[in-house]
Amino acid sequence: MSANTATSAAAGRAAPMTKEEKKVILGSSLGTVFEWYDFYLYGSLAGLIGTHFFSQYPEGTRNIFALLTFAAGFLVRPFGALFFGRIGDLVGRKYTFLVTIVIMGASTFIVGLLPGSETIGIAAPILLVLLRCLQGLALGGEYGGAATYVAEHAPNGRRGFYTSFIQITATAGLFLSLLVILGVRTWTGEAEFAAWGWRVPFLLSIILLGISVWIRSTLNESPAFQKMKTEGTGSKAPLSEAFGKWSNAKWALLALLGLTMGQAVVWYTGQFYALFFLGSILKVDGPTTNLLIAWSLLLGSGGFVLFGWLSDKIGRKPIILGGCLIAALTYFPLFKLLTAEANPALHQAQQTIPVQVLTDPDSCSFQFNPVGTARFTQPCDIAKAALARASVQYSVEGGVAAGETAIRINNGTPIRATDPGFAQQLTTGLTAAGYPAASNPTVVKMSGPFDIFREQPAVIIGVLTLLVIYVTMVYGPIAAALVELFPTRIRYSSMSLPYHIGNGWFGGLLPATSLAMVAQTGDIYFGLWYPIVIALATFIIGMIFIPETKDRDIFDDASSITR
Image (cartoon, rainbow, N blue to C red; front, top):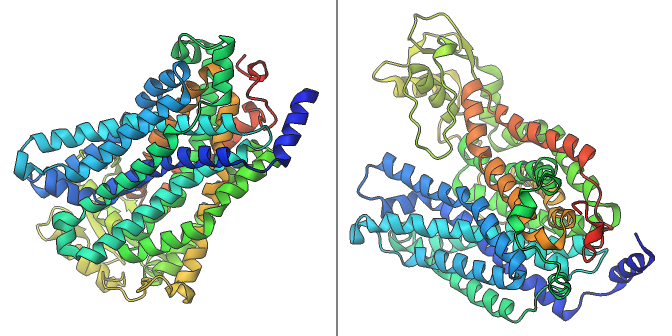
């Protein structure tokens, strides 16, 4: 680093944040609050949305369509990254992410106004899918624009700290959505919430939209982009330059494999999969699960800023890759501790009651079903899916005729999966053997937010908070690390694509993949191998190929590794 750059970095570290810089961070961050607020709203309310917009179909079919609509927002995000990334590199950061937040916020608000299929027929689901696609496209451009804009305003030596405020808003969006849903449910009651109250959280997003658009409209273009435009060094074809030249494209690929891939699975495991694991596998009720997660987010979210600030001191790599490694090494004991504390009776049954699936293993499918459209109808698949839903640990053995599948509980009489009363026989057999019933009193239950002072929820919140701290390690410095990898002329395009592929696809597929792995093996912890293997791969690739970038001067494109 040159003497001038070093002096600039030292000054940046010493100077307090100006009023304009605070406004830059606030205006940029509100957009990412939108991103995750909407994501959690739709994910939490998918069942109700299916009822209103796909009412002409049976319950199973409408749930499938609701999940497909949810998935559409994920699938188009990388395309939004390319489309808006190109505009951001050609026209400017401010203009582009002003457009993305208007599209995103308006689409979220309109979902709350959209008539259901009973009112306007087939037009309702078509419009809903269209709105979800618009949201996905806008989100694809929103994060890269916000991160780039903030980073290009930050002084050298403080980019990790400044951009960490962008990162904390993802968790803030989750926290806000949980509070709004719980509040509206309490206000309206369950019946009214199902009828119309579910629309209120979507409609309230207009407040965030209005504030964010007003703040963003008063901001100036980023200094780095202005400098590039003044000097006439901008790219005329950002996508071709970023991804059509191997010298540039390889860094986008390495950013995916050596940074965002591992960051994404740690992020999704610490928040999404933990939520799923508590509710679907450990059978903790919804309100308690939400309270447990909300407390862990409240206690752990300061880590985003802490690790962003720390990355300015010791580097991006040690924190991001260290988070991937620590998470991979500790997931198994932490999730086993969750089971022992959240549902002790289930934990005891898993340790002491043998259950075998008697079948030909070749007749079993790998039940990967990310959008709920696949159907698994073979006897082996039916048996495994039933045991997975009941959170039963089992082994697979032979011993039956070809095409037959049976379940043997505690060395008792096998229950055939093709019997008409299979589901009831299985439930009765498991309960008789010692697996807890649905009303199991040992499952953790919180009647109010301050039940955290009881031992059982306190231990669970401690584990969940540690998982959130892992999230903050990998996610807090990621924006600064991605911005610093690429030159100004193609920065918006180059950083957006690996981020959205990593988080939208590698992270987004985690719940479905992990659930399929659990059903396949009969081990409720086996799904953890998905984030563990990917996090370890990112650690190895990142350590070998990703350079440390914290001291780069992003105003000087000659210092970029892609130049």
